[in-house]
Image 1: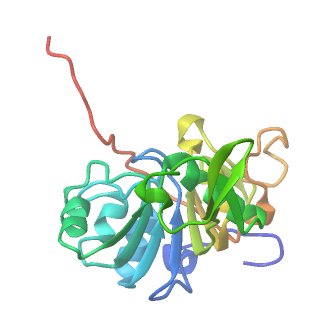
Image 2: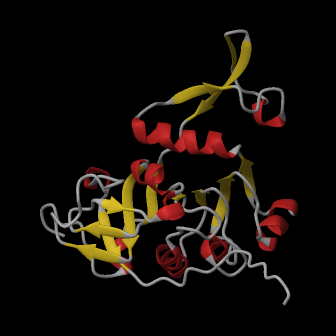
Length: 233
């Protein structure tokens, strides 16, 4: 990389610096908009004891689920288990530490981390196991719990298009958690379907400004469907 050019040529370079024990934040929802090739590179690197923050943990054999196969994840911060039997098994057998967080709270914890806000109050989770041990304050007659924000050593994101300066556009529902994740990493890596030259993206199209992005790589994607339901003829 040189100057404002964020493009890297290989996945080894894209994930250089990720090490054992780090915190990784990953974009995506289910299998929609996940940085699948960056995840595959993490598996090849064999880094361990990761804390992974994501809406869910992929499925068996794909997405973040592949990092469970060799016990590369020590702790998972997510909003649901999803369609992942191995995730469920490791959770129930005590092999994986899991912090289940309400989905909106998880999104705000990541957004706040990216905005430099250390913590915030929310009514969600008060009076449930989610709120146990957390500070409580009352606002307008309603109790709220204090939630700390999240930042990661690395943030991995899937975009649709990016220019060489790291300005990113997401496509439809693949936008999901990705824009907020992109702001919350000390190093943010974005993989995209297409890289264009600076100036080819209209400023009004850009969802993530390049100031948040450290590395961009172009990949090809399988785009699996998490759960396909068909009607019989």
